[in-house]
Image (tube, rainbow, N blue to C red):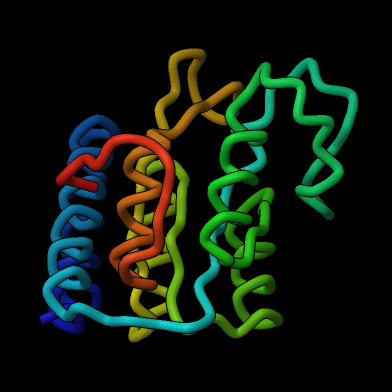
Length: 180
């Protein structure tokens, strides 16, 4: 089912989405939601999980760049990076930051995870999921209160749930939220 979704439906949706940017973004979000449901239905359990983040989660005023190494973060709390690092450390997953699709693909190629939890905008997530098939990927759309590519955020509960879906019952802090 994921093959049909990503190799037939996704290109068709992108063709139809060419009519309107807003419509295209909604179709991309639908592809991500459908992919997530199909991946969750597979109940895949993995040992090497990658949490792949966009650089725009970092506050734009920060002087420390985390793109090469997220652990350079000063953990000041002005953005969610500190909390994401804590979640990754507690669950034992690999953590990486990409500035775009090409770097994300290179990170995946170099780290060779069994599965990915990815955070990004609809465009980058949907194309990354399609490009990486058959690897199981759970996509979480970032929130963009200041517009694209600047000071974005992500639901930490959704991150925790997606990680748990792949690695099983690992005790994670915070409330359980049923949907990703």
